[in-house]
Amino acid sequence: DQQVKQNSPSLSVQEGRISILNCDYTNSMFDYFLWYKKYPAEGPTFLISISSIKDKNEDGRFTVFLNKSAKHLSLHIVPSQPGDSAVYFCAASSEYGNKLVFGAGTILRVKS
Amino acid sequence: NAGVTQTPKFRVLKTGQSMTLLCAQDMNHEYMYWYRQDPGMGLRLIHYSVGEGTTAKGEVPDGYNVSRLKKQNFLLGLESAAPSQTSVYFCASSHPPGAIYGYTFGSGTRLTVV
Image (cartoon, rainbow over all chains, first blue to last red; front, side, top):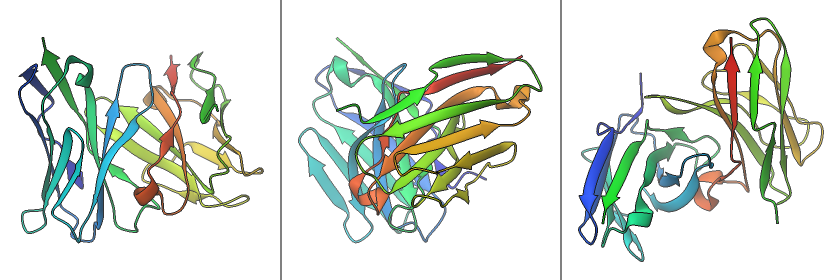
């Protein structure tokens, strides 16, 4: 029973366009959400996060949107660059971070 | 500044063998975690520690043991390896609370059990 779901295994986007990665969750107790980026043969690296008291957080080209009523969050990357090609994991926590629950990941390919 | 270091990076075990994976962090983080990554499953928490001398079970703890004798080290042990434990193992550490500050992950250990 996956509490955090990333239903798109992969996404292909043209360089310069917007990439939208989606994540759904089932546990209404989750109060903090994060996105991690992972390159092959490396560990995941923290990208951006959002608290449940907000509905949007921006950091440069990356924006995370949270829709609590729909239990849905999304990561927007604008403009997409070839270096953004990686696996993106959505993660959530119900204790402000003692334990993160991860989704299965989405492979993003940005074509030049 | 090494961050989180995992050793070894690769290992092949025979069914029934035992081994220990070592995780070391130099950031003075209180919290440490062991995750495994399997295709289509994401990262699943095996065990974690909120401080030196403490450990707790995560989502998939069966077949694993851990120890946190020193703040900077977190060891993951497999007593009798099984093919189902073939996976990529990631160690992570964080200041509390980890979600706000983010976890720092190691580069992983790829374990194959034959």
